[in-house]
Length: 295
Image (cartoon, rainbow, N blue to C red; front, side, top):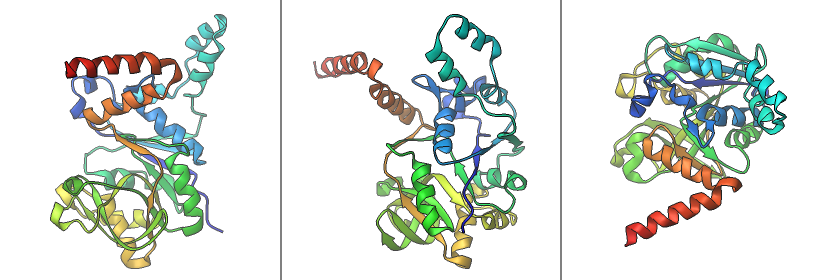
């Protein structure tokens, strides 16, 4: 019987320079889409997938991120006193049980592979998930939950995948596919940020992974890849050579790249329109902008 995936790594050590000056004092991960921080979307998705242990790989200046998951007794007391039960429930949903969350420091920015490797002692010999909070996915069934259900049938390693335009291949890890079966694709190779003409397919890896402990062993070798960084895709690709057990999963949902300003704005508008109490006012405003542009 396969072990359940109950641990997840959240690499959040980046400085968020594309969002300066905001990120001078505010970690990018707690910047909000409507009224929820990016990290809350990631945590909620992990919880829906059955994750019980949450491992954050952080860096200096991320104290506000750690505080976000702590209790706020004074605020809770005020909300309770004023009878604001709905807000109290929202606040409680951000709390994490003692012992469920751990923080590991990544002292040098050596890439995603290195960030995942930093958490190796907390993973041990178990399968684990990796969630990149920059990738926010709107889906009826959360993306990682879809993947966990598929993983129960396949085992091995699994990466979330989506089609991208050829000219965007150089921004992603691209998959070389040997076999396709519905949402699943068996992978025979991975190329990190290739030139458009060198991409083996139009299927790109995005920020959701289910990985076996052998990937951590591959990362022990600390080989630099694209951009001089230690690439997670390179470590996964080594498992293809040894075990032929890597799958791409075409998730159902819409992904927003909230690591970019345009993607963050698109997500804000989309999530705002999805909220019943905001939809009419926001739609009226957007329609007015379009009429102004047309005029």
